[in-house]
Figure 1 (cartoon, rainbow, N blue to C red):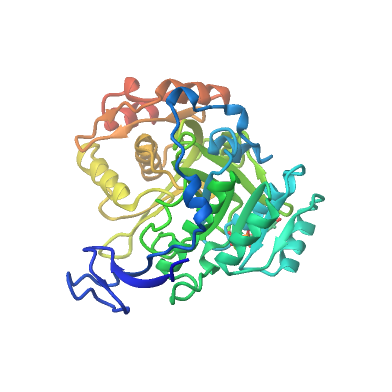
Figure 2 (figure 1 turned 45 degrees about the vertical axis):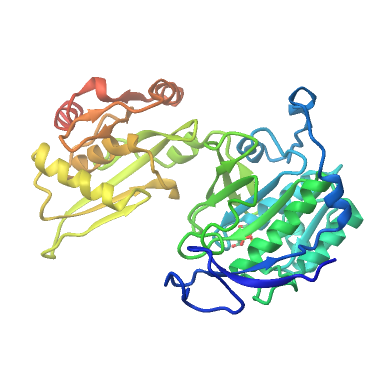
Length: 433
Ligand code: TYD
Ligand code: MG
């Protein structure tokens, strides 16, 4: 086996040198040098020889029945129907959001499968404590290790049916000098484990912590290595959690799974609309329901707004759950196109339940909520507002309207959209008469 050694490669220009530097001497980019192994990757010659098979298209078997269910229906849907043998799934999210909890539940659900749970972050007894809390009964094979090569060898020896690595940031390989969590280490360790999983046809979960900037250990290093990236979202102080597929080689990328974190772990929420509207107070100024699309799934959500005379020369605008720049734009449109004197108002907008909405279809509901709060007039309690707002103050149609209308109907709401008023001013007049 050739001796492995590492070099530092600039991710920007490809410049290579033996030692680390904060700035690339060639292109001047900061923090772009990443330790990378060169020559003689630790791969045994056997795997090299066998990698040469060529398939004819007609010989390639495509079978959906190969999918392995994780026992968490919401997760299976996001994956596209379950796990595919040899697939690598990165579960990314902020610390404390529930990644370990979800994967422990999966491990417990899969009773007939030998699940190897590699705890690099916690001790085996901490995982056992969590299992107790989840009232789990199944068996899990726990392995305390942070050495990627040792783990790879263990996988080859034990031949588990599923491997969970918690987390990839704690692993290192001795072939690189960088510490755990360094971009080079994270990428190399993930690559080695992915190779083993692929070769042995074992599904592999990698837990990845997200940094403050929203990256999974550096500039999205892992997204290329894995087949599927699941993003775990939610307010830690609230119970709702969304699991979103942002990359998926074996299924759709716009599916969203909804979970509720409780005393005994995560429970799938089959009807999120009902969940989000459970505590809604009807016929109060400042509350408007909208139907948003989370992937292909329509969901009803409540938008709340508050407008109060500001004491400051520059009034405050606070957005929770919606984009701040979007809120500023909508306030400007309301001022310029609907004649609402919002200049001196502090405006707060909040999506209840702690979810973040990126769908433009929520624009109309935000505008109506602000107008309703400002004018102190409530909307009919059964209206769900759907529509994008343009800079001219026009309400525009959004995709998936039919599905949104159907979902709204199920919960007794009727949709107010582009058809019912051509401009936001007209919609305000009509609904707040
Ligand atoms: P965890 O899965 O450890 O988060 P991560 O692996 O993403 O860092 O979840 C941690 C939080 O979840 C912690 O604050 C405790 C809470 N929790 C519950 O509320 N109920 C439960 O049943 C469990 C196991 C954890
Ligand atoms: Mg954890």
